[in-house]
Amino acid sequence: MKQPKLFDYLLLTILALIWASAFFNIKIATYSFGPVTIAFLRVFFGAIPVLLLCYYKNIKIEAFSKDWHWFAMIGFINLVAPFFLIAYGVKSVQSNLAAILMSTTPLSSTVLGHFYTKHEKFNLIKTFGILIGFSGIIYLFSDNLLITENNFLSALLILLGSTCYVIGGVLTLKISKKRNENVTGSILIWAIIILTPLVCFIEQPWKLNPRSDSVFSVIYLGLVSTGLAWLLRFRILVNNGLIFQSQVSYLIPIFGIILSYIFLEELITYKVLISLVAVCVGIYFVRKADFKKII
Image 1 (tube, rainbow, N blue to C red):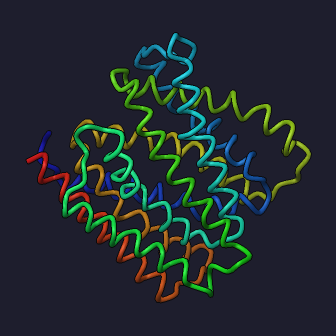
Image 2 (image 1 turned 90 degrees about the vertical axis):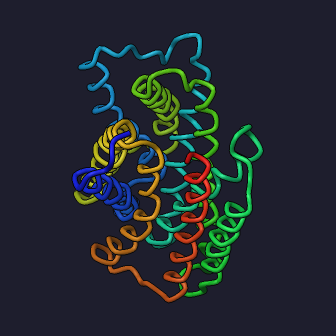
């Protein structure tokens, strides 16, 4: 991998901003749409740039090949379930809390990696990082100003959504020899197939009269935060490697809190800031252990 340059760090920052902006846009989308509709529109619009890229690069989509069941399963666990859970949860909690809760993905992946892979076992540094990071999340749940008995379950569902991403990532190892564009396009197709009957029977969004800002937000979530962000992530991954790309984990919750304050004027308490620091420190130690292993 090449040595990262200023332009590479700029792309990494843009990727973090795009992913962080998803949280306050989900909040705006919930003003008019239900969680199933938001999930459907995200995968529908998100599939457009990915499938166009596959067409342009003449990459075969294997959504209905003999491995269709893997694509369908990963599409449900890695897209349908988390998109629904996050949208459902954000309706009742601040979007900046969702940004922090979702940033635990690297910590959860380390825990699952220990049990389900041969080369991702715990060591002292990783264990310390995991304990620090999840201590921050536990502390966040003690913030009675933002998390009450009325939205406690919603916060847990967001945390469950982040775990779905991790499980989906582990399942993707089963088809890791396939091209990333093919895998992403295929799981997006299956996510659309799964969500289409659900959105038709459960929420029937065509009967709604949505606000213009909610419409803009769901289109943005699909085209930019899902489709374009994946393409940008893939470019960074190819040019600079996984360790460099994984640094985006530190930036997402920070930008998420800043953007939610700017656009929604959401409350930032001292417990939110302490939890944010704890999660970032935890991610740092986990990443440090992985980097040492690669060296």
